[in-house]
Amino acid sequence: MSTGYAAGVSTPPLTRAEQKERTRRAILDAALDLCEETPLAALSLRQVAKAVGIVPTAFYRHFASIDDLGLALVEESLATLRALLRDVRRGDARTYSAIIDSSVEVLVDHVRRQRRHFAFIARERMAGPPGVRDAIATGIGLFERELASDLSALPGTEDWAEDDLHLLSDLIVSAMVTTAERLVDTASRSPEEAGVTATARAQLRMTLVGAAHWHHR
Amino acid sequence: MSTGYAAGVSTPPLTRAEQKERTRRAILDAALDLCEETPLAALSLRQVAKAVGIVPTAFYRHFASIDDLGLALVEESLATLRALLRDVRRGDARTYSAIIDSSVEVLVDHVRRQRRHFAFIARERMAGPPGVRDAIATGIGLFERELASDLSALPGTEDWAEDDLHLLSDLIVSAMVTTAERLVDTASRSPEEAGVTATARAQLRMTLVGAAHWHHR
DNA sequence: GCTTTGGGTGTACGGATGTTCACCGAATCT
DNA sequence: AGATTCGGTGAACATCCGTACACCCAAAGC
Image 1 (cartoon, each protein chain N blue to C red):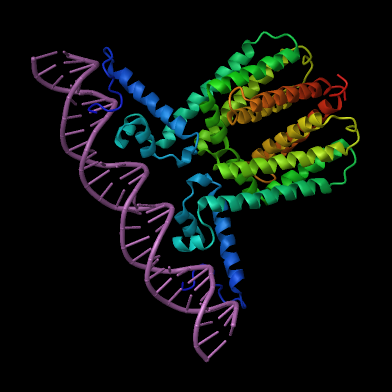
Image 2 (spheres, helix red, strand yellow; image 1 turned 120 degrees about the vertical axis):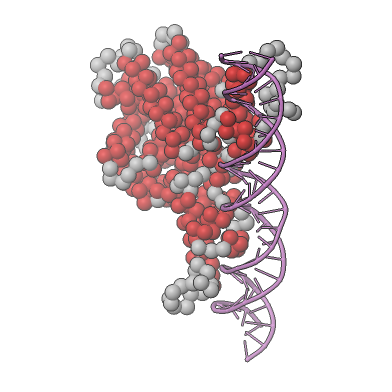
């Protein structure tokens, strides 16, 4: 292998920038795969390089260190999280019950299709290096605030205090995080997955029942 | 140092079994400390040995491997969790509101006093080796079932279905896990801690309001 | 009191790790 | 067409890792 991993077999031109991006992606993918079994902090540069099929030193052409790689991974994973929020919002359900159903369905769908990203977030949220942990906390915090603002636009929350809105959105986000953690460890379209989603739906309903009666206690 | 770490300065007899237990504790403590910054999987035997003040090979007199150490740590941490449940149950509060207040107070107290154990559980729950993860999941699952049985003895849940009870207890346990995770990253008696506990109390109340109205929807 | 036991020691090894350095050759620039 | 850029290579290093081995000596057992 003369030009290393990225040597296309015989594909067209293949500019230099494309090549670099391709290798970068391969590194991110390999790291994401390796992170399914090992926390980021226990990942070695040589391990990643070997999985990608490049020599260890080539790694430095793309990232300064494993921690740097971690930051790129968390950024990518948080983009996945933002996509989740976007798709949840996109739902045009009318009733609360329909909103819950579609939101859970969107969550399941995203975890299925981006399992590695969600697994990465779940793992590193508590176990990652400080920079990674902070980034994840910030991302989830943002999610929570966006949800609170969405909730304030829903009928029934017109007269809610800001604090109570955040109480509720934080509760919902926590439940979604827990659900995502469970889905990540669950096979797609398995009975267990169905159980997890059924539980999530019911618990969200129970939470919303609580919210609905929150103000006239 | 002729007899290694455990050489008491000039204390009384100090039997062999005591010595061994003392070193074992020192290893567990050192590992618990190191785990505050590093996931278990990234912990090295030599690192632990150095922190304890023994030679690497001496480690094997107590544990077969780092994973083995991890299992001992998780066992110990789960004992802390059981103690938490015991103390939560011990509360003699009458009203739901008082039960919530005392439960949160007990949680805060336990996290304060056993911060390292809770931090270990929070970290390794998702990032730990399979054996450790399973043990933690089992421990929390047990906690949930015990709580469900406690709830069934409370007034207002006489006619609840088993499934609904677990829905609620699971929701409460998830909230407590989230709260514990936050407390672990919070300084004792800080304003942040007060905020976390206030949020936890309010959210538990909201959840119980939902539960109270759950059956007459 | 002599033997056994066992938690400690120090040395030594083969292998993995992070990082440096000089070099190469094709894509890119002029 | 010639010079430059830059993502790759491969060798070399000092350090850390887990583990095997032989040994030591005080407590425990006879």
